[in-house]
Amino acid sequence: MHAGDVREVFGEPGAYAGDGLPYALALLARITREQGHVPLHADLDDTDEPLLLGEASGRRPPARYLGDAPTLVRLYSGRPVAGARYELAGVGEGELNIFG
Image: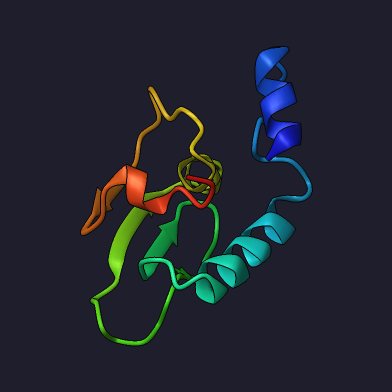
């Protein structure tokens, strides 16, 4: 996330979408599961398989995200998503923030 922050400040391409993105997504899935976050089924534009995040207990039906992986990382890290194209159903943006 911090590398994405730096790239964004300097106007560099690929903010939140660098070579480490697959590792960041795997870590995000683990952290959201361990912390019992709201379940989320993410259909990412840039992958063939959906990403399942959060608690999978069945107490709450999974929310749904449609969009790209960098925007998903921004949502979970509480970074701005102005101008990003995505759909989010069953959960508010603020509920996804793992830092706040």
